[in-house]
Length: 198
Image (tube, rainbow, N blue to C red; front, side, top):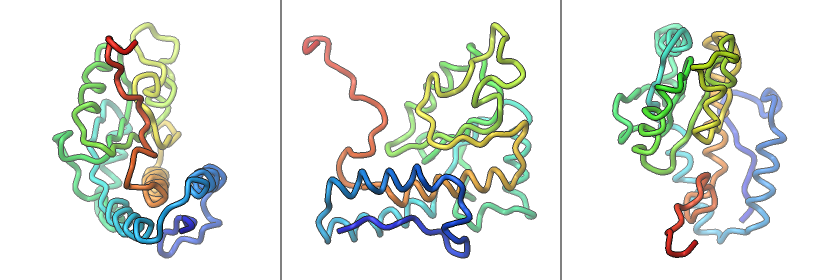
């Protein structure tokens, strides 16, 4: 069964800017092949997963205020299935890292990520989370959250507009729709090695 291009209702495929990445992912998944029944079940499960992503908000600065604006009435991310923002990592599907991450805060963020159930996703919001932002050369700021977590979507800006946040969240939906649910194909982290095997 062939995996199709991800579609979002009412938004043409050509309107998205980074289709090359997803097309390469489709090509890699199609090379592995899938049985028809498992492929149809994958499509159904991924449709449900992509339309009900529950974010765990980790907002440490001004990007968090933009995330709150996206949840308010004007932008209303509930229409895309993101409305259930969780305070517990055990109930969240993705973590939105919004703002500056200091070296003191990094172990806490990593612990929250580790407590989330698989499959889990990370969105880096704003210049501070992506690269350290204006504090890049500071001794106490982590130069990008990708140093400690595998990031799925980057949303640039300082702070990014609510429209950019919605665009990034829709990009994550598109990525989830492409994944294979069955098997460990999408696993981003390596399994911990047993010291006796090494």
